[in-house]
Amino acid sequence: MTDTTTTADTRAVSDVPLVRALNVSKAFYGNEVLKGIDLDVREGEVVCLLGPSGSGKTTFLRCINQLETIDGGRIWIDGDLMGYDDRNGQLHRLHDKRIAAQRRDIGMVFQRFNLFPHMTALQNVMEGPVQVKGQGKGESRAAALELLERVGLQEHCAHFPAQLSGGQQQRVAIARALAMKPKLMLFDEPTSALDPELVGEVLAVMRELAQDGMTMIVVTHEMSFARQVADRVVFMDAGVVVESGPPAEVINRPQHERTRAFLSRLH
Ligand code: ADP
Image 1 (cartoon, rainbow, N blue to C red):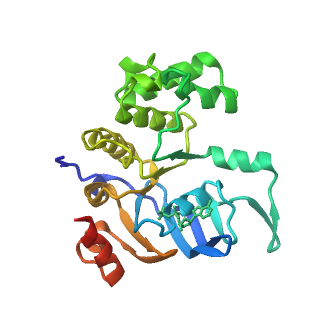
Image 2: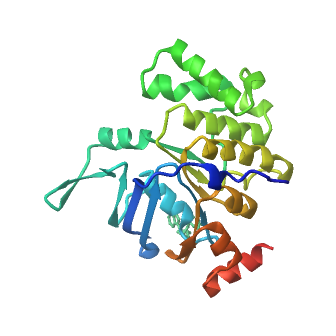
Image 3: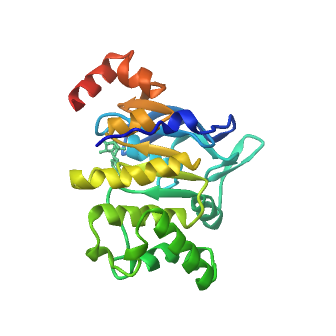
């Protein structure tokens, strides 16, 4: 694949942290998977999370999106503390409805596309705004068609997932997440389940999204994407952030042995 865009250089990135994760910890049955993760992501910034399998990347994304509850630390999105109400330093768990509302601001795209198999591409994209936001069908349909056009699938709007390639399904999944007008998009290895020839079309859509100013956290092994699109890469291993910085530094001149070992295994 040839990539010539230099998205990270041309995009405006503001200084306001849209995401602030502070000392986030998470264990499963006594197995500490996240051991005090700190991460700030500014509005408009694209951060790629790299690291070996099992290092906690997916768990961290799931914590940001409240698919997992954290054991320690705090996460704010746009100044809003996730999952809790902080009253004079005392944390109180929010009601489910409030948590659901917080989660609506965050779009997530998974490795597997998770589309509703009995719905067309258009219906998949309309579903969230209609069912969750109570938006009118006409308005949702128009917005969904626009989004499908944006991901290059307007001609496929009446197709069911089984009639689409993996790359097309993943693009529908991106359009579906965008239909909720998220403040932040999380991508969890969005191309790793795809045949190699389909990876480029999904990365191209993500690159455009980045160019349009979307704030994104992307777990990926696609080094060319990280190099060209990320403002920052964060290397995780065994539940900690080992190092982070501009892709040219971390990928080309890693400071830590663990990062070097990981990168050398990719080539
Ligand atoms: P990565 O995304 O970097 O591959 P994960 O966050 O998926 O890492 O996994 C980190 C560790 O947490 C792994 O050891 C994994 O087995 C464990 N883990 C993840 N989810 C669960 C779960 N729901 N129950 C028990 N262990 C889990």
